[in-house]
Length: 192
Image 1 (cartoon, rainbow, N blue to C red):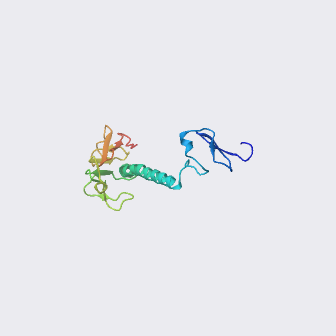
Image 2 (cartoon, rainbow, N blue to C red):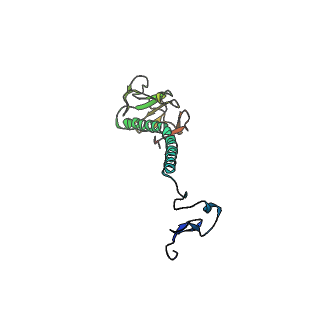
Image 3 (tube, one colour):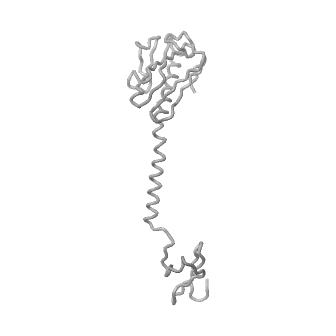
């Protein structure tokens, strides 16, 4: 502060500006940018309109960025549902006297019992129809037939007589999304 009635206003990068009530403002650091800055009102900040425009732009950008991963969740969710249904068939085979399995034609899949994929179809948990459609979600999967024996081993035939000897990889795809894979482990039937 100066002595008397002078007021000193700090500017972070230009220096100090001294105001006297009885005279014109003077600049401690004279320069072309401070020459036209007269009076107390200066153009050194942002208006509320500028702040609102920036916030709206940030909101639009974040909505666009966050909406992209949401489109990919349909395929991931359907693959997780297929895994859960495969596990369900395995548990039913281990806990009942019947052999349970799941068959897919590539666009849909269904649960069957007693070695008859064309005849004895059963509604899967969480579904309202016997056949679960993947095509209505734009998803396709590798066609497969997978049955589980009384010990939960995955088998490649409907009667559960031929356990698989190598891992079974099922690939699910949807337009414009990276494919997802389901791995069925031989001997144990573990599905990670």
